[in-house]
Image 1 (cartoon, rainbow, N blue to C red):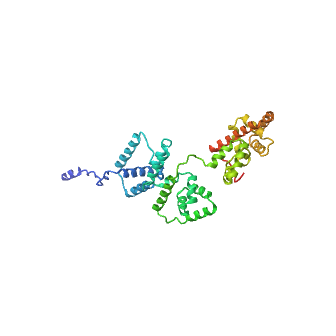
Image 2: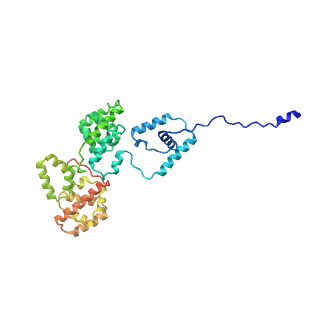
Image 3: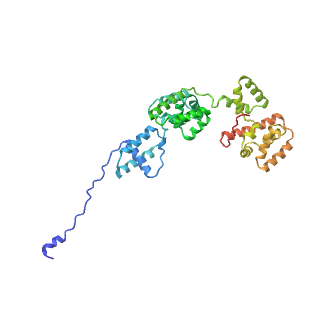
Length: 358
């Protein structure tokens, strides 16, 4: 190799350096950080209950996510680290919104104060009134469907979950149900602000109703009292009610559940559950007292026919040995069985068959 070429052979190529600049670090707002966290968790496959947020917050989050493009790795790590640090530093969490706070304070503040706070909250344009309306029990919503304009009822049904809407529609009289259902077909072009105003007006009307002193209506309360009353007292009260208010007396009769109603209202498969709550001596006394009495004997035989044959045989033997039962003792024992059935119904373990009339 020529002498003058030697220096050229010792030359090594320079290492190429990337000319692509890193993404600039960004200072994010709290809303942008929330969008980053939501995007990251969704990417990781997490299921987020975003639907539980108020609609205006859902809309703001979606709008913010639509405005963002790329976030560099360092910024992502910083936002996630900050989020985790905040979670670890939380010592006490409060419920979101006035409704959550009132639920937590239930029993500790007066009903009048709670109603006033709800009215103040519903007046805010940022609060979705339908969140509270959808949480109300059916008996609070039925008057709206019965007394308000059918268009208002149609809007409410459209906002409710399908199952609850179907339940309420099924309780309406036929003609009213058809009119409300048809009105639903006319709600396609109703704008969101109109729906919000309808909800706010309904909520204001519901909040202005005076608080109820009793959880149950008068029919249910009278029926519950007569359920555990002696039969002579029950018959005498019903006769007096029929003379004063025949319609009310008819409703009370439907609400009453006595020993004689067991065959028509108790599901046969639920009969064994009674024996777990009623002491066997009480059960024997009630069954023995019912024998030979029209209506009551059928109820006793219904119970015996739908429990295990071994237990039924043992009960029959004890009933034979029990002898004649005093009327007072028999009624007390039957009342114990009715109380057990009502307990099972209240806990949701059984469902009584509804009847139109006695």
